[in-house]
Image 1 (cartoon, rainbow, N blue to C red):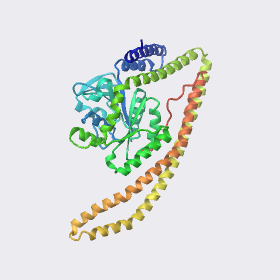
Image 2: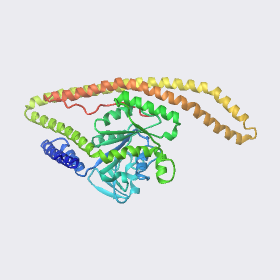
Image 3: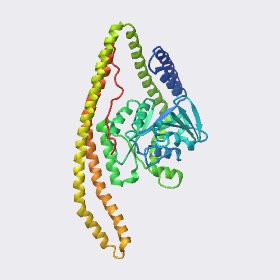
Image 4: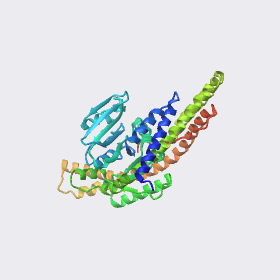
Length: 459
């Protein structure tokens, strides 16, 4: 008799739980590392059938607004500056509520209206409140059956610690909604981030947000650009990208209006959550367990060999490692100087082009203002002056915007080429440090799960 899919899933889940439990015991035998704690967290997630659906991307892409539109209400705080600084978990609850967990182990219940005081850069700068995580409960249909929506800090913002928090969270994701937007659509930081995401997530959904800022022709151009980048940079063949206006979608969910493309996105993600999330959870748990097993094995081998090595030889190996570390630090300083020098050359060239733009723009602006003034025969004095200021602002923005878009794309391509050389060299140093560290104790090298990347701090 053929076993039913439900029984097969239950059996696989139990076998996997037994394996992770054994892994926790193995990790406990080492005096270093966090294998037991991470294995316990993995078992808890498996037992509760929690499916982590993380919304990821660069800062100010509209990730939080997209989450709110999926929930159908302004549950999480949004704003015009980078806000989210703490990973926030949104799960099903019969009534809106929230809890804050701190790094010292304390847990504090709060109202949903107090969430901003703990998760935003504005109210909790650089996480001075020592928040570990915030959990929000909300009665949204999407969150039933263990689905947990996760809001993360954006990468590449002014606040480097936010990028670090997001990267550190990646091992906990099951599936990802990756949010790009039209301003600009995709930069080097985001493609590097996607490489890291694919090491952990079993499923990716791509969203192009803020489509209400462009017309239909520009939207088609942007979608084609995204498909090309995803194919050439990441090898994703014919990626499906959902054009959305999260702002319009949120407004439509609260009032009448256009859905901003959210209905089509829901029509794709909801069947996936209904039918495939169990399989994905098993796959990501297996991958996480394998990473933990490799780490536990490496730590135990390191300790065993260290205990069997004479003190004199250990001291010699420490001297070798200190020499290697000093060389890596010097290489790091050299890279900083070289990269800064070449980046400054790029910016100097951009400044020259901007100066040329300004010089060439003056005659065109003067003509535009004279023509505008000629069309305002009834306006005099202060009223004409105000109208001319507004017209000058409009013409300047139109004139500069076309130039900015073209230069931004070109500068991004040049920065990709520049940073690519330094990224390659930097990762070779990182790999060498790992290899030589392992070689000191004749241990096999653990492959790096991800590589370092460079990204422009601002557009």
